[in-house]
Length: 79
Picture (cartoon, helix red, strand yellow):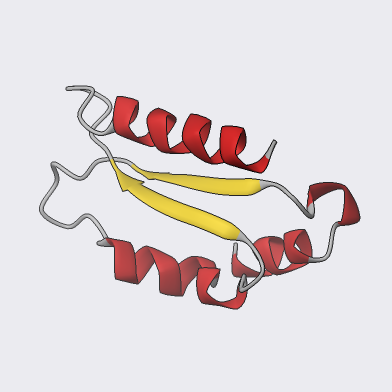
């Protein structure tokens, strides 16, 4: 998946896009933390992009609204 994000870095149509990653299943003991997800997806290479990892648990809804708030705020700030 890191390669997919790397190619995303160079797509002209997405040059102003923000990236939100929902890190779901955070209620499970073996869930990856934000640093692990950043490493696995190669997000550190997206230096010119604004991205965020939001920890979530879809069954309880925890983190979903926070992630959507981050997304809407960042889209509004870039408009």
